[in-house]
Amino acid sequence: MKLTLKQKAFADFYIELANATEAAIKAGYSKKTAREMGCENLTKPHIRAYIDERLAQIDSDRIADVKEVMEYLSKGMRQELEEEVVVVEGHGDGYSEARIVKKKISVKDANKCAELLGKRYGIFTDKVNVEGSLPIIIHGEDALEE
Image (tube, rainbow, N blue to C red; front, top):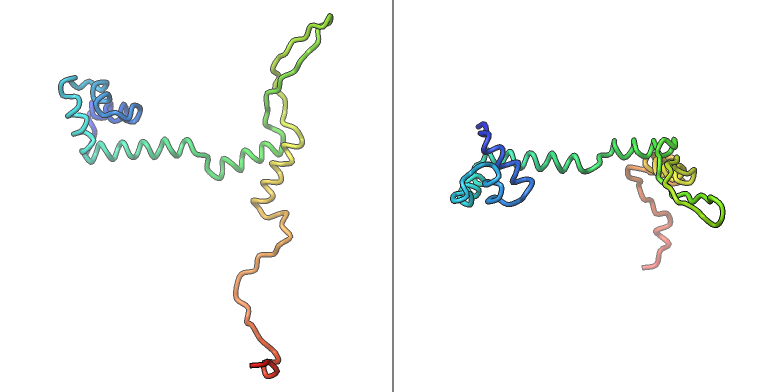
């Protein structure tokens, strides 16, 4: 079932305000019936489904996925990222002035990004991952004391 413009507005305002009555008023429902209409709208499956879908989309947009993290670390390793630093410049007679300057990240930070990428891909591990089962054989079991 498709949402009406008023229902869609209600759902969008509800997502923003988390208050059904206020969302109903902002969507254009009467102030007298806003409370009842807000509660009723939240019980309608098609409106609830729209709200849940939008909330899931908002959550996924806020949380970085694996690809985004890997791209960020790769940019850091290549020193393509910039950071802001405060630089104090002297102008003579004991007068100095601070200003903010953008610069590439340090080699130390780039190395950390490379290290994290290396850990992700298992480049720096001395351990060997062995999968499977090995048989256990005990020799000399006749000589064991009981």
